[in-house]
Image (cartoon, rainbow, N blue to C red; front, side):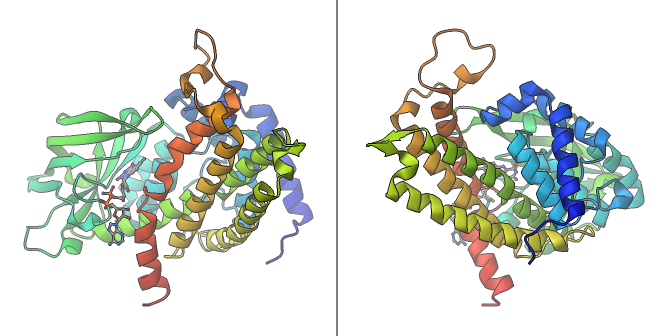
Length: 399
Ligand SMILES: Cc1cc2nc3c(=O)[nH]c(=O)nc-3n(C[C@H](O)[C@H](O)[C@H](O)COP(=O)(O)OP(=O)(O)OC[C@H]3O[C@@H](n4cnc5c(N)ncnc54)[C@H](O)[C@@H]3O)c2cc1C
């Protein structure tokens, strides 16, 4: 694969840089670079700016409002956004349910849902996992029985990221009887989160923030027209969505940006008579990660090329998920090592604009530990890394 950019690609990179310089709001940039949690308003504000520029949907085909960029342009765009401190697009609408809707949804559903996703007018969340169905997702119990023109949904979803902001949830539900095979008894429903009978219980994550929730359904009525595709075929659509999710979790551009930041910090951190970056043990670890990240970048480019025309990535997305999250966590560990005991007074809320009181420890040390704690999740969500290894064994290696 040619790693040199063409003149046209360099021109595109300049265009992206200029756009980011002019349009990325300073308050959002600062929060993102500090690794702070963004509010719903921050995320939506940025996504609407991208939409105005026509750059919100990098993975959609042009006919639905996507950019139609090839893999190199997508990579340039993601890298420049990460380096400039632009937030990542919230994936649930734009990168996860939208490809399912434009691939398997009917025309009415495409007209009804896609424009609002593109314009970030609605916030989506993902209702797959349940208290007793995570890795073994097909054993999910949330039921949907038919009552005239509606399904009546009962059950509980868990670990539902940012459901507290959501207007809609895409949900896997059991429409088949208990004796029916799991994979033919599951349907894919789009459910309005404002429907009567839906309630949330917050779950605090290791970093101390509310990022995930339980979502309870108590006789929630959902119009049959909100079902994607055929009844009982939801498992097929669910798996396609997961390949998009896993490709997205690789976050190569984000890791590259964090690695660059680690180099800057380590170069300014005293260690013996030199700096931490000059410490051979640290430098060795750093170099190993840098090389692996470069290799991952090429793998990602190959996968993204396959999605150029709106196709789903293949099971190779599991490789991206494993390597991407392992590397991201290794980079977090480098940051934690640089911050060392500077991160012990863990008071992340002192990074907030409205914090009143005396600050303890440096912002960058707290930020490093905030990221470290938060990102323990990445080898679990989207299907744990152990499960991805099982998928690679079966679907890629044919074992
Ligand atoms: C922060 C966070 C956000 C999330 N957001 C969402 C969301 O928005 N929507 C959503 O639907 N879900 C979400 N999830 C759920 C996530 O997809 C599940 O946690 C994940 O699939 C694992 O399921 P589980 O938690 O039930 O663990 P379990 O399935 O109970 O697994 C426990 C451990 O056993 C291992 N294991 C299980 N089965 C096997 C096997 N066959 N072979 C080898 N090892 C195995 C797993 O790797 C894991 O280490 C989120 C999770 C987290 C942590």
